[in-house]
Image (tube, rainbow, N blue to C red; front, side):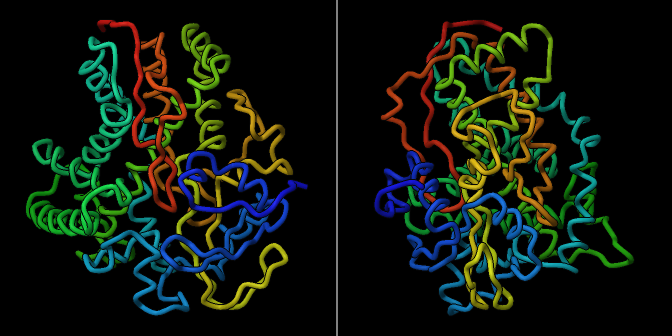
Length: 413
C-alpha cells in the first residue's frame, strides 16, 4: 500500500505531476469525496475497474439538472458561459433518448472512412505550420503547432470559412487559458462563439455546403430535425471537445517522447523504415501514459448507488479520474513506464460506453500525423528549457502544458 498521509490535491505542484497522488487514492481511497477548487464537492473515482463501471453506469447522468446543489453551484460544473449562451443541449450534457438521437445525426462525420478522406488536409496543415518556424531553429510547439493544428482542422470540418478561422483561434485560445486570461474572458469568448455560430447556421441554411454544419442542418432522424439551439450547441461542443483534447494529446505526447529518448528513437527508426504499426500503438500509449483529459466530464447520480464499495447519494457529482485509472497496476503492467509497443492497452482516454469520444478517429489521425511529421522534419528536436520550468495549465478536466519551448537544427523542407 502507498504509505504516508493523504496528499494535497489541485495545487500547482499536484498539476505538475498528479500521478503519485492518484496512486495514493487508488490504494487508500479509490472512491474519494473531495472539495474541488470551485467549492463543489464531488466523488473522485480512481481505480480502472470502478472507472470503467462508472463511465457506463446509466444511473450516472450527464444532465446537470440532476445536481443536488443550487442553480448557482450548477454553473460551476460545466464549461464557463455555456448556460448563459444557451449552449447546454450538447452531447456532454444530455442522456438518452436525446443523446442517442443527436449522436446518430453527427456520427457519420467521424467514421474512420470519412476521417481518412480528411487525411491529406491534416497533412497539409501540419506541414504549413512547421514551415512557419522550421528555419528559426526554435519554436513553442504549443502555440505555434499543437494549438493551431486542431483548430484549423475542426473549423474546416465544421465549415467555418477560412477568413473567419483566425477569429475562432482567438476565442478558442481564451477558452483554454483556464483562468490565465482576463476575468470573465472565457464566458465572453463562449458568447461570441455562440453568436457567430447562430449567424453561420443561418447562412448555411440559405446556402448549404459540403461540411458538418450544413449536414447538421439537413439531418433528419425519423422526421425530427435539429433545433437551431441544438445545432449551435452541437457545433460548439464539437469545436470545444475537438480541439483542446488534441492540443494536449500532441503537446503531452511530444513532451513524453522528449523525456523518454529510447522510446522516441524506436519510433523514429520505425517511421524511417516506412512502418506505421508503432506509430499507431504509440499514440494509444501516449493517451494512456499522460493523456489530454485528466478527469472525465461531470456525471450526477440520479438515485443512490454504490460505487467501488462507497455509497453515493442521489444528486452527488461523480468525476472519473481517467489519469488515475489508466495507470492502475491492477490493469496495466508497469503502468508508470512508457512503452510505445504496449499491446494490451484498453485505456480509457476516449471514455467508455455511450459517451465514448465521437471524435476519436479524427484525434488519432491528427496525433499520428503531427508526431510523425515532427519526428521526420525535426529529427534533432530537444527541450529548450529545464523540465522544471514548464508549467501546466490550471483547470479540472484537461491536462496540458502552457508552453513547450523546443530547439532543433535549422532545416528546410
